[in-house]
Image (tube, rainbow, N blue to C red; front, top):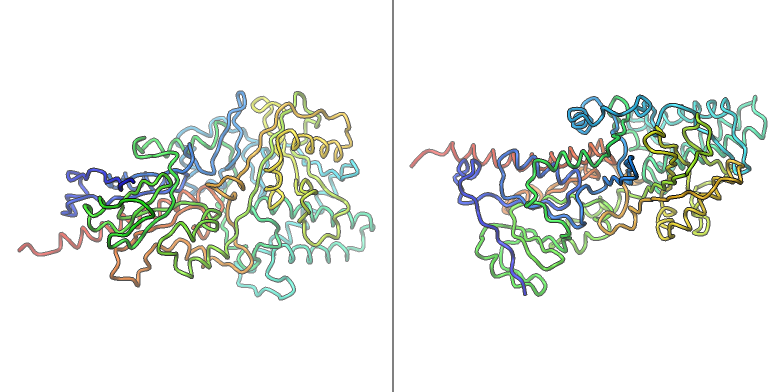
Length: 537
């Protein structure tokens, strides 16, 4: 039997004295990723002192995970700073010298990021032939033209036709197929090749969106995601440096690692039994409306909880994680919004088998020209690997490739051992390059975001049937404002999936954490203003 831990109260800090309160509000932040750390740091900077961070895993960073490989840093998670102008991640990196060694080639202005903008992407077919560069460029221009059309539905309020089923994938395939087949100048063989390239592009797009298939991405909502102007930047020392900078202002004693949460009891207005936990000490702290029950049976009383769990965790565990249950409209938003897995497969070779100007090897399966969806049976999971990028510069990374795979096929890949995945990737590279002498890599390293029980996916997307309104509902604190008798802002929600414009990004995660901290800052500022406005009796 274990009692709720009740930490000692602080009464001499500015916030407590300003509020004429006997105690500081106690705030628990669940998750030490970018959102959780940003929220915690904002709270501390604004005078809150009773803050505890609970992190389920044994490290901080969440979906940022940088791994040292000799002199190089490999990113299993977040890799690029997407955009510069007004991006808090960019300014944090620039202000602290993290971009001083970023090469010009690592400042990519392309929509789909590579590790370098230098060089040429090699589009290879499964018959071992390279597609001519001029044909690749011709198709790329055609694809980008249709991509711009997908943005117009949200941005210009353009109505979505029933034939598209409100799906980015279906719309893109239909429009491009018509354009390709109606081109009078192309031979039939060229048309088939372009149709096959279309499928490869949609696989890449799925990895970008972290969706199982672009068929699942909402056409009417696709254009709401907002791109920050400026280039995409790689941080040579590792994205984890951003995490460390955020953590610098947070005393280590406040962050408790290896502390998964079992349940959040909110609207806790009277003594309740939590499993077999003896909660009698909670009565010594009247007025704290939240109890955070940890897996180790420790129970922490709090005034506010900021939960930064991924959408994948919420989908899996919301029924058991919250007591009482989440409101039905919030549950529906959790269910409607999408999250999938995008994994990387790093292969290190003793020598490069690719030419110096090659910045990526793109896999184009010629027999997929007429496929309706790029979703495969389990034994063909490897067909979802869309490409291998060349890590650049070689002086830093050596001879390293980074493969991309997403959706259910990524989860299947995670179940295989390193040896099997390395063997399959080697065979694919031999097949598509036509070079049967490619050796097996001397090292393989890969991510496993889908099977990580504390993550369960890479990042969110607006699935068909969902909208930005669902993102707003997901971010709405509990209890809802109409519940006027209950203490406000008991449970707050942060994380990339809660940012309507910047979901799926690191800057969206950071900004969401700051947003929830600011809710509390503003609430207590209003209370302070109301307190000092009272006439003295």
